[in-house]
Image (cartoon, rainbow, N blue to C red; front, side, top):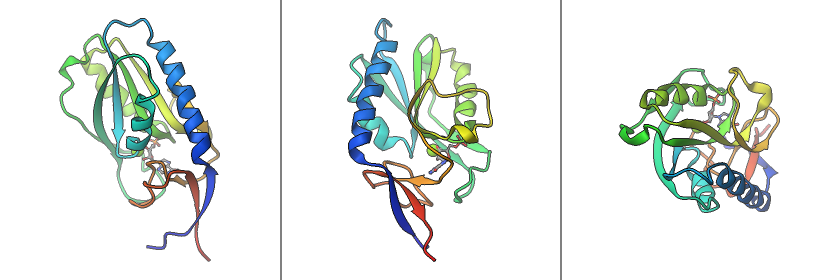
Amino acid sequence: MDKGKLKILVPRADIAIKVQELGRDISDTYRNIEEPVVVVSVLKGSLVFTADLIREINVPVQLETLVASSYGDGSESSGKVRIEYKSFDDLKDRHVLLVDDISDSGRTFQSIAEQLQAYEPASIRFCAFLDKPSRRAVTLKPDFIGFSIPNEFVVGYGLDFAGYYRELPDVAVVIPEE
Ligand code: IMP
Ligand code: MG
């Protein structure tokens, strides 16, 4: 596969500052709840972001994971979302924060939120590291957003293109080679 050239869109220093701000906002939101907030990291894309984010949250957190993937390996989300998760028996009456790398059409978030409603949580909120508002196809929007970006395909800081680039510390746009 041709991996193309990279143009940095969000440098790592800006990411670090933004993650601190998000941690503060999230901590303020959950300041007065009794039990730890259940942070559900949507793998694999949000692994890097979640690891940084939870260390900037200063209220107790319970960390859970699920795996969500839209079918196919291309740079367009197919709209069909497959979700794998273990049984979250203890989500009843808990405050759930879904953490994902990017909200594109928003279908992944909507689909997960619909399925987690079955566990009767007290609330479900959504934190997206990146948001492409111009692409939104559902009415739900993220409660916490790191950066709103234009409609470009980005990689790095956990985000991949067909499995590549998750390890980049910055967020970058892939420019196909001529
Ligand atoms: P949505 O369901 O359309 O919101 O798609 C969200 C998912 O599509 C994300 O969790 C990513 O896995 C993937 N995705 C959307 N845009 C990008 C991008 O620019 N780079 C990498 N992955 C993306
Ligand atoms: Mg994803």
